[in-house]
Structure formats: structure tokens, C-alpha cells
Length: 294
Image (tube, rainbow, N blue to C red; front, side):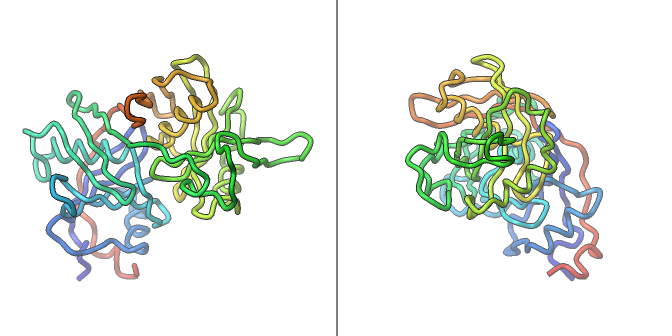
């Protein structure tokens, strides 16, 4: 029988970003691409991101987290998912410790400290943005990644052009526009995500700075498509806006699913993300899901 059969999971969301939390601590099993896709195809377990808890790899950390997109690919970081994991590890009766208010979670992108601010609101330290062309990465050198050459549409009247590139655990390309809702993101998103300039693909954000402390955005997530919210994307948008001198270092970023407060802290360059995590239900994985999963 598959190691995931009958495993308990939590269905959660971070501002509508659909998150499934699966606790594999105490097990050596690593979720495969096929298994992730099988879980995503199950209506009760479907997700934008699957957050899988493993035993800590480093002393002083609380868990190692593997993150899977809907298509089974792995992500480096997920801000909304990290808040959901923090909720589970402090509030869920089966996997949590109510005495904890601070956690240090590790992902392939690094350490993500999380602080419980209230019953369902958490602040996650997303670390420092990576801004060099080869850290994002881009396929060719650009001295200034705050404005690099990329456009779609007619050469003399492009639909979108000159984005800002930021890596917040995942690659992001941020386009500043007047109205993020005026574009067909379902059509534009996959073209840009898979553009040759992004060797690891990219998350695509459309953002409008409404005031120094307020930004409105939409997102196409690499490996997941259009989502209601993206925590790392909101962080990337704030960093991009500051780099372009369009906003303050702290702002409310409004996504279709709700608001996140993002701060690019000047003292150490870390990006802090504050927002809610919402529990929806718990269930177990049907063994039949994995009959054909590789």
C-alpha cells in the first residue's frame, strides 16, 4: 500500500490561496510528482500549493517543508502556505503545540521564521530578496534587473513591457500597470511563465501602486496558474515597487483574496509578510488516489 494512503491532511487557505498541509514527520517518504498531482486532483484535497512537513534537518528548526505546485513541480517558498503551516504547528490538536508562538521552518529556499501575532494572523520573515540576474535566475546578464528587456505584443505598442525581476524563494517578474484587472492574465500568464528568459520559469505579477502604502496586484503562479493570493509574489511586488521608487518600504498589498502587509526592512534587508491563515477542514487520503501515481 502507498505510504500516503489514509494519511491525514488539513485543507486550509491563505487569502484564498488554496493550501493542503500534509504531515510526514516520522516518515522517510518523499512525495513524488505523480503523487502530488494525484492529491491535487482530489476535490477534498485540491491545492494551489501542497505543504509537506518533514523532520527537521537543522538543529533549532521545527520542520523541513517541501512545497509542491498543482502540476507536481516543487517551489522554493510559499508565503501563504508557510502561514498555514505555522497555524497547523501551533493550533492543530494532532500536529501542533499550543505553547509555541515562534517557529523556524526550513525550505529549499532557506529558513523562514514565523511569529504568531494573534489567533490566525502570522508574520513570516521571508528573508532577503535576491536581485542579481543569475540569482533570479535570468537566461542572460542584465546589470539592472529592476528594468529588464522583455515585452509581449507589437514592438511599437507592447501589451506589457520592462518588468522588474526579483527572487523571493521563487523567480518573479513584476509588471507595473494602471489596472491589473484590465489584462487577460489567463492568456498572458503561461506565455510569460515559460518565456526563454526564465530558465526556471517564473511567477508573473501585474501591479498598480495606488499610494505609497498601498499596492493592488494579480498573480499567475508558476506551476499553479491564476491564484487568489501569492505571499512570495506580494513580497516581490513590494520589493520591485521600492526599487522603482514607487512606494514606501512598508505597504498593504491587495490581492483578489485579501490584503497582506509587507515590509522590506531597512535594517537587515529582510522582507516581512503579515496575514491570516484559515482552516477549512481535515480529511484522509484515499488509497485509490495512488493506484497509478508514479
